[in-house]
Length: 132
Image 1 (cartoon, rainbow, N blue to C red):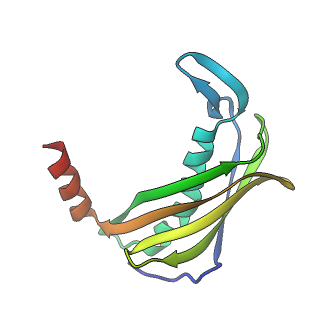
Image 2: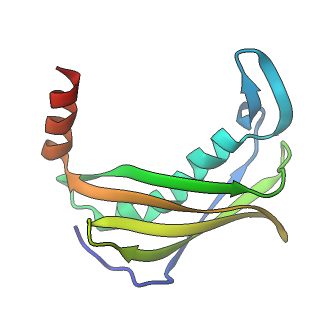
């Protein structure tokens, strides 16, 4: 793993909310707004942008944690901008970042996200142990 980031370094990711991102379950549509589930997916991606630059070819990132405070809705067609901020690599080797998501000046969500970079072979071995 290469650590090229310092506390406060930022990555930006934008997504236009689509009908596939709305709050819906097997029972049907709950709301025609950006779901917390989709928000979580995109928040994790914003943190992964750090991992993509840090991992070696023989390594991969694996999610360890995510927390989200969903503050305001985003509607289909609106652009949500995520700003991820590198915070630290903690004692467990976990890369921790905070994020905020906005539509213009409106705060949609805040939270934290963690990932660990491990050798691909170790991840495969861990998965194999669990699966068998």
